Amino acid sequence: MNLRDLIERLGGRFASEGDATPFSYGDVAGEVSAARSSVVVVDRSPRGKLLFKGDDCVSFLHGMLTNTVEGMSEGKGNHTSLTDAKGSTQADAWLYHCGDCLVMETEPGLQEKVSAFLDKYVIADDVEIADCTEDCTILGVQGPKSGEILATLIGKDPGLGALEHTEVNIGDTDVRLVNRSYAGSAGYDLWVSGSAEGLFHLLVIEGAVPAGTEALETLRVESGIPRYGLDVDERVAPLEGGMADAVDFTKGCFIGQEVLAKMNNIGQPRRYLVGFDLGNADLPESDTEFAVGGKAVGLSKSGVRSEAMGRTVCLGSVRRGFEAPGTKLQGPDGLVAKVVDLPFVS
Image (cartoon, rainbow, N blue to C red; front, side, top):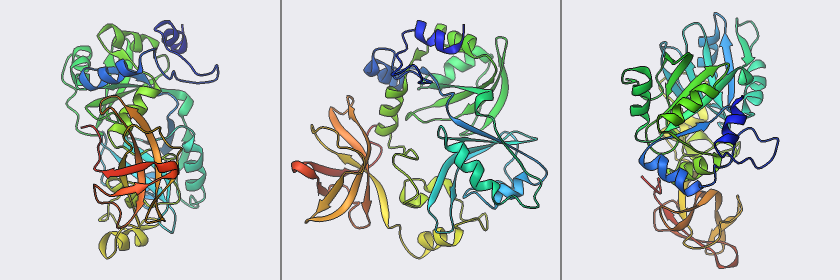
């Protein structure tokens, strides 16, 4: 039995035959509730994965990415981004130091763009870049009881800080365990080379509720976490897209550093990522324009109908000067969005 077969046996529903992961297991609201109160397990295998090797890979990536790489020791990780000379965001990524190599995680499919972008700058450096997306399965374990279920399986508290990682053994499976939260509470990712269905099944037996992509998206939006390609793209800088944690201004030069440093030190972002409270209205399409006094000042981004709030909410991108909570924006056909602080649900 492969992982998809197991997921289907557990009630996983796929939108189409070609989808890699299920959109739900029949009860999205229940899956969201389990992630908020207990623990869920999700298949994150489509996440992009790049492997970096070579004597110069650390110094090379340090000069390319917005967050620090030099000085990051084995077992550590960080959230980073890739920007062009104008400071525009080309990619959103998570980088992990695994001793003799560095591993990068991106949005599904984005690894191809990142690899091509970086490869142009590898000239005399000893750097090898390999796409290892298909070589590894990622199982996400999210929720306030995620640490408890993993402590039971590995025989001790995981003892990892944010984005720290270590190798553990669960049953007969070797796992790289990463402290990685993306659903609004505690969470971990389990990186597995080879078969992962046994581990998935074991997590379910221990009490983890299987959850699909719809539940994860609801949790992400309610938690105010931006996603590259939906809420952040090449039109904005990381500081304008709610990704300030991905930039280290003390690390030295990187592509786009001068623009971002000026924005951070002597200016202000041109735009801000905020929350839009839309009341009981239908969710607008992404990039729907919102205005104040007839002047377009904002765009809607990804959103959901939040059962926790009983309202429709979405992330939004607004021009500087319109980011204050309580600001009301006019959309098409009488739609009104009220700017609110993120996260929507804490």
